[in-house]
Amino acid sequence: SAVISQKPSRDICQRGTSLTIQCQVDSQVTMMFWYRQQPGQSLTLIATANQGSEATYESGFVIDKFPISRPNLTFSTLTVSNMSPEDSSIYLCSVENNNYGYTFGSGTRLTVV
Amino acid sequence: GENVEQHPSTLSVQEGDSAVIKCTYSDSASNYFPWYKQELGKRPQLIIDIRSNVGEKKDQRIAVTLNKTAKHFSLHITETQPEDSAVYFCAASTGGYQKVTFGTGTKLQVIP
Image (cartoon, rainbow over all chains, first blue to last red; front, side, top):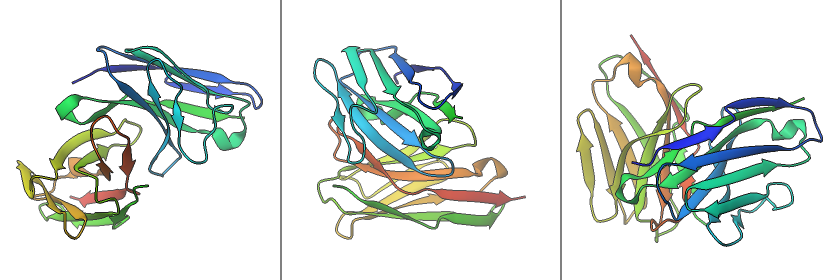
């Protein structure tokens, strides 16, 4: 199955700043998915990133707040912009592995102070 | 869009007993149903999955059943062990590189 390297693993950021999270996959994948997991909660899909086109955002998430790049079939970034304490969460990327389900990156634990 | 409900939210069992977690989904087009285990501070890990052309699948102590008519599926863990303690998430997808919708999670505690 695909192996995903996600970084940073954690960060503490000042409110009003932005953080860019990177995911690198060891194989080419069609779609990459970005999730948010708030403490003690389930995973909520932020957006789906397809190479060569704009990401598709879920209800409640907008491109200005969470811009995504997908420059090639092995890499994607998610930026959390103009952060507030409410953005404190774990952010995970994910890819589909053909018949092996979906694999997740190790996650980025973001704390906004 | 798809909506996945999961019950119970917490479950405590004695070591050696069985644990059952149930999920329902709303989109009849969903045809892929994975289950994930997430230990504290770690990423979700796929433990078993089932596709809509199969009613049951088993892997050692873990089994999943699917009732497409009723739109529900369940995870069964037999002979539970303390290392089974974690949060378990069910999920549903239409497959084909489409998004996955997760249930709300079940925190399983296995008491030695």
